[in-house]
Image (tube, rainbow, N blue to C red; front, side, top):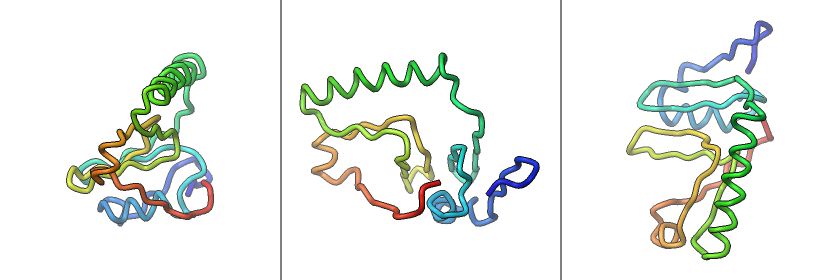
Length: 120
C-alpha cells in the first residue's frame, strides 16, 4: 500500500518469508514496484525501468532466449509477474525472466503454483 507521501508500508510479518509471500500476493501490495525477500531482509524498488538501458535490453534478450528455447524445445520461459521462491535459500523475488528446463519440471525441482489475487 502506498501512502500519500509515496512511501510503501511494509507489514511487520513481511520480514518472515511466509509473511512476505502473503504480502506480495495480497490485494494490499502496491500497484507498482518490485519487492525481494532475502534472508530476512525486504528490498523494495519503486524506480521505473529505463526504456533505453533496461527495457529494450530485456526485450532483445528475452526475444532471443525465447526463440532458442522454442527451437530447441528446452523448457519454459516465464516473464515478469512470476514470483520465484526458494524457501531453503530464504529468497523470494520477481526476476525479469526465469527459465525452467523440461528435466527440472519433470523431476519437480521447480514446482509451479498459482496465487489467485487481483492484479496489482
